[in-house]
Image 1 (cartoon, helix red, strand yellow):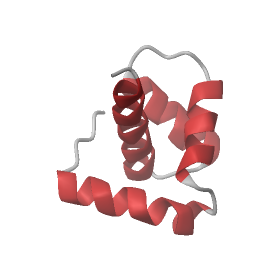
Image 2 (image 1 turned 120 degrees about the vertical axis):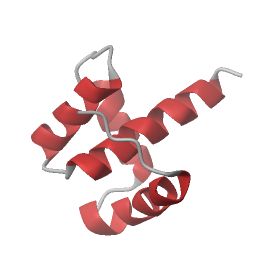
Image 3 (image 1 turned 45 degrees about the horizontal axis):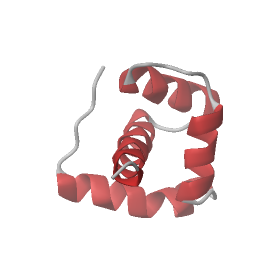
Image 4 (image 1 turned 90 degrees about the horizontal axis):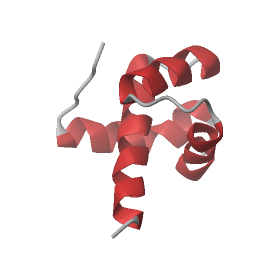
Length: 75
């Protein structure tokens, strides 16, 4: 199941993740990078949600943000 949030919702979810999870965004990015090598974002989202007890919405926002920042690093 793919979850696409509006840009406003995405920003709000990302801003809340440290308070909700107790972990900063860079820590979550490291978790994603050290996790299984899934090719699809929805697979990464499902793994992150199941393995780390996140809601699917927060997991999807993290994966989307990780992909966005990863693409920006390559420019």
